[in-house]
Length: 279
Ligand SMILES: [Zn+2]
Image (cartoon, rainbow, N blue to C red; front, top):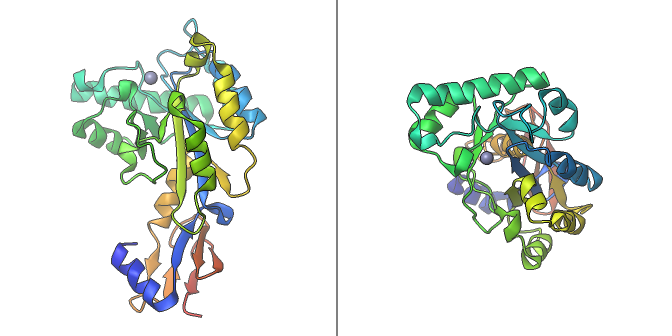
């Protein structure tokens, strides 16, 4: 909904704000690229702490020495999301349009066959992207793609095809974790988005870093632990809400259950529901 509608609604009904699923105010997600064998250890750490993550795979490097095998993809990442990272980890700024199409389409197709699931997410290899490549990806059914540009904040992405993370895992500090956990719940929705590669923990001998991050962020009542695509789906649904001209009715035209707070009331808006917000 746009700001004017939000302001008018505020004048009529008091404060209205969106919440994440189950009425939570915060969300945490992780994104790890390249599918080297160290993903096995990383997945087990995430599972141990009930974290949700997205793993971006290059279908062309699966089964090579040092990489995850095609046979293990489905089971290894079962609690998480598998998403594209292009077939061969190319520099997107150095590809022809046809090469771009093949890199994305063939990656998506291979991963979907592997998983028996629809794959719609992506991250840009080397963080490289341009407008033609975004258009190509969108035309091939990709709905979000992560960059490597840190925002150093907890805001929601303005454009999911340029989804800037909060920071790389090496940039996570105690202060950031405190700021996230202590962010006042009555303000904005907060999203903490951490990315990296599992091989970095192996190379730098600092697996305790990611375990420490998980330990400090796990099990919080007001945090939604979600994969990238779950956040994309929820936020997109939230942005699709329909408001009546009198701004007294809201309609959820999506397939997602939405949570809102109006004054001090939490409103659960199931798929297809119309709700009065004036009482
Ligand atoms: Zn990569």
